Image 1 (cartoon, rainbow, N blue to C red):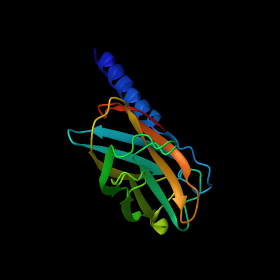
Image 2 (image 1 turned 90 degrees about the horizontal axis):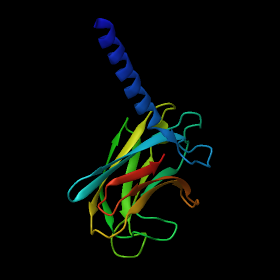
Image 3 (image 1 turned 30 degrees about the vertical axis):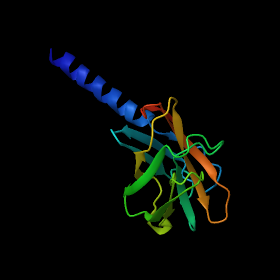
Length: 178
């Protein structure tokens, strides 16, 4: 009986460890100093969502100057899903790594659907997870799902798309990359 309990406990711990590790993946980075590893969490509440992308520089060098991350609460490829979610707050975890943030109206509908934050590059270390927890207000429900996107950029640079979070018409999580 003791062996069975011990075997069950070891199996459970291995399963939990594997799932925690397999949840993370590679960001789709093209720039040498972009975060190259991470994962995303999505939580759906009655009037808001909380989207928490997590970043790590595991093999890429940490950024040195003028870098920022954009959390786009719409599909930038074709402007879909504009004005459905409006970001209102940003909380950092993993250290003091965000220098400031703002929101802006990227789609032209009057609501601010993009949240941009600047990095404190000198506070970022390799092989450390950094998480940005953004809360957004649900503005309306549509009969179709949508997506949010993460981009890496700098002043006067083109965006480097890192990944996306998809959601259903009721704002439930429907998968992410990574």
